[in-house]
Amino acid sequence: MKLLLENWRIFLNEGPDAAFHGFKMKPTQMRVSPQCDTIPNDNQWEAGEAGCPQFTNDRGIGAEHEDIIEAIEFLENIKPQHLIAYSRGGAIALAALRESGHSPEITFVAPAWKRGWVDGIENPTFSNGVIIHGTRDDFVPLWHSAELSLKTGMPLYVFKGLGHVNILKYKGNPQKGREFTQKQIRYINSTEEIQARLIPIFKLVQNFVNSSEEVDIDTETDDLNFIRDEIEKEKPDVQKIIKYMKNIYDFRHQHFWELTIKPLQNKILQRLYQFALHMIKVEKQEVS
Image (cartoon, rainbow, N blue to C red; front, side, top):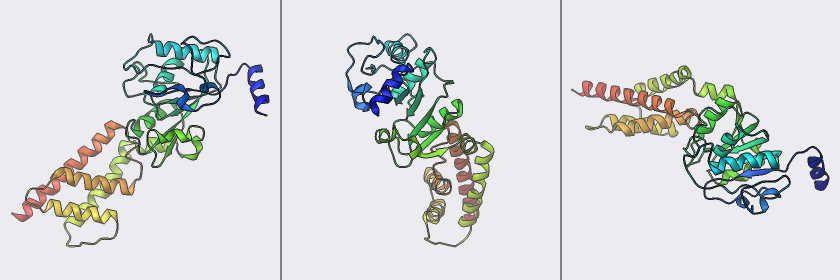
């Protein structure tokens, strides 16, 4: 059956699955068989040739760089039906797809498109694919993929607890993750909705600090106790208060923070900072 499918692909002028690897990797490490099982001889590609591109580790490259040129030649001559584009390889894919005459279906795996690897891809338009990303990625923030999804319309699948490397286990099974639709991502990043999520937290903190209640029921009330204890100190640590309030935000809206683009994350932190200063000021006035 596998041989039959391969023959049909040849008949339809469709190539096999392929991959664009990440930083300091070899194509064979992507484990995309059989195309990437063979180490490439050079950066010139002919139809039917085995192997996947071996890129450099250069940063800040442009359209004239050898990696982008090789990626375009690979796409146009090998014509992969499906491409796995991982990390730095995702940035190369976005650049190459602007010039390539062949447009395969692509699975972007933790794409590092905003990490400065490739210049000129700030406004990608490619939409024939999906994006997968883990919630514990310490190298490429999840919000990068949320923004890419918003810009391109590609669906985003999020994998709880996975990092930048072990997310590769699901490169062939995106649907195993939790899908976040365009509507959901826009809702998470709506300034009006962010404000609506913060107001109940501010009211909760204010009411709790002004009461004598001290309970230990769950994570949220733990943080409320910590906030009140910090505010009542002679020299409160504003950053600790912000941290505890953010814990409440995360507790109530799981994964929202990771899917919030950086400028809005900064606005949320600014609002928490302003509220923390307000609470400290009120406490000092009451004491005096």
